[in-house]
Amino acid sequence: MRSLPMTSSVNHSGHPRNPGIDLDLSWLDDMRYVNRSALERRAQTLARRRSIKGEYQAAWLLRSIACMDLTTLSSHDTDERVRRLCAKAKQPLRPDMVAQLGLGDTVIRPAAVCVYHPFVATAVEALQGTGIQVAAVSTAFPHGLAPFATRLQEIKESVADGATEIDVVITRGHVLSGQWSALYDEVKAFRAACGEAHLKVILGTGELSTLRNVMRASLVSMMAGADFVKTSTGKETVNATLPVGLAMTRAIRTYHERTGWLVGFKPAGGISSAKQSLDWLSLMREELGLTWLDPTLFRFGASSLLTDIERQLDHYLTGRYSANHRHAIA
Ligand SMILES: O=C[C@H](O)COP(=O)(O)O
Image (cartoon, rainbow, N blue to C red; front, side, top):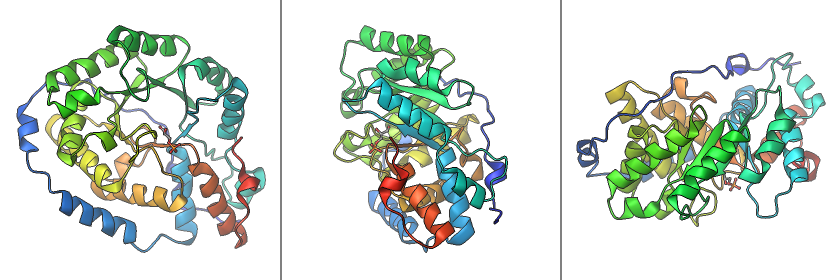
């Protein structure tokens, strides 16, 4: 039986929530020049880096599971499908794998299950007593263009059904037309509607046109009280990319340096391979440090990543790749 580095330090301990600050447009002026090609070069070095091997890779992959929002966001979702996903969240790895990995009493599970509003109550019931959070996408996800009152009501209803995390989408038009006060007011109202539930603000970065817009929208969302900033809905043509990740983590760093508050980061959309998850963990470690490599401050939004992670862990244990259907999610 092997013992893995790092697994014992996976935890879900809390830290004080970012309360937000007054809107300060001078911060946005500081972001006037964002060097896209420098960020792209930096992203390439992260992705080309020699991959982590052996027991360290296995440990990092377990960390990826612990930082995952296991997601189903299909128009054909059903209560039964959500229950199966929750069962998978409760036991993400086969018992024989857990034993061979030598995990002992260490429980490795995704941080949250993420669903549409109609399935919140089902997920809450299925996950009772597990510590796994229930996240609801909200505010007319993925486009975000329903009437404002409807969007606020949707948040309140998901919270009433038991969601402890709310993933909202912003009005992309506010960013594209530079209406920063409107964006600030919108996110602040979303935060108020969330109450105790944690607020993840989805920027829809693939639709924001420039990395400068991505940085500015990240800063305004944090000023308005975001607990996390999140890249994408998974429904845009371009979703989570490493250059966008760099832009957003640098905005998080700036916010932390200027206010002292820690805000989380959630890349989402198209993250489906174990290798990609390792690239993102490297980005977090190098840009924000080990403090952020924790489910309280880092999440993957992903519907199919867990399957590939299981395959890679199986390979680590047996030296062979198994077929995907052996690790079916639902
Ligand atoms: O927020 C999560 C995303 O919708 C998941 O996207 P994905 O299906 O590409 O993993």
